[in-house]
Length: 444
Image 1 (cartoon, rainbow, N blue to C red):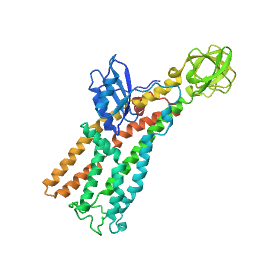
Image 2 (tube, rainbow, N blue to C red):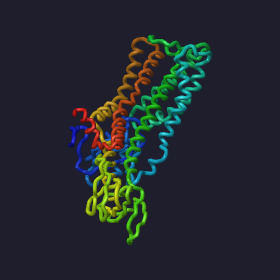
Image 3 (cartoon, rainbow, N blue to C red):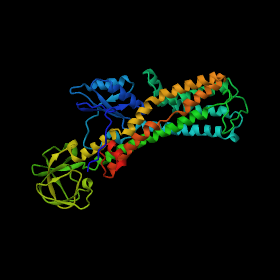
Image 4 (tube, rainbow, N blue to C red):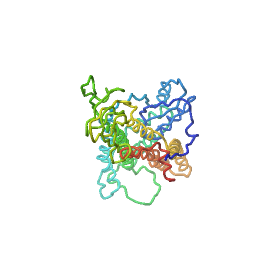
């Protein structure tokens, strides 16, 4: 049975040309993906869908279209793009090593936790606020805001140079504003006086702001959002590992018959038409046709059927299935990316690269959310000044709007859930043809 779901033709304009896949870099939130998608879709005859979770763009272009123009468009928007390298039959080496971005996030997260948590505790528990505690908070919070939060500030500056704003813009503006205001309150206000304390109260009363510091807010925001980025990156890597484990189900070496003798070669060197030997208990190296011998083959990887299937001369067999009985000689009919196993992995990858309707909605919201929040912060400043409050109190209220408006989960939760869900499904033998199909199952 095939399940399908309606597509949003307005969101995904169709093109009759081939699909081009781009590997993207420099994206830090769903707003970045939304911006790249808009830039690509402005090109004549181009239809693009950018997935932040997989960091890929699937672009439909007219026949003969120069893919370098797509790459240039992405680079002009402030990001990087490249065409994917040809896939080998086995797992890619780049995926097996440590992820530099994940390592960097982990180091910054640990540093922000070690330095930032004491700042938060001091600010929230008045009993611990000893004389000059605020200066210790400044000493601890400064590295968190400057060093741990550097990826946010760098992304915000890059976006500013290209005349755009993303979630990183909100994070950077909010934390820097809180930090600079705290410096003003400490050096020019009354917050730096000996014996200053922060009372923990649930009520809200307007003040001039110069007697309060917001170091714990800036450090806390950076710590928690770094945590979110770290776990999101780790989830994406684990989902990629699901695809790699699917490919690793295949054989790594194969015994090929050359001039009547068996020669052990790498699976990458196996060519279509080669005859190879499969002994009892071994995996069949690739898709092929049995030339001689008879046996029972465990094809539960593909069919889910636990009972082995009898095969003999002339029968087709599939790569990665297990020979449970006698000796077989098989002629390779499909190798590399043409095998059924490779096509299964490609199907899962395509499903992860697509977009469900709810994800397109989240992307559209995140694309306009940032400028709206900045406008609200400016309006808050104007309203408080117009109501007769001091400029310090008005600026405090405006900073509060920027600090609390960092909902990166808005554009992140849906693509990450689809990514991890389809990857985990592949591990369990469930192949999901696309996110719209997964989304439509709620109606079943």
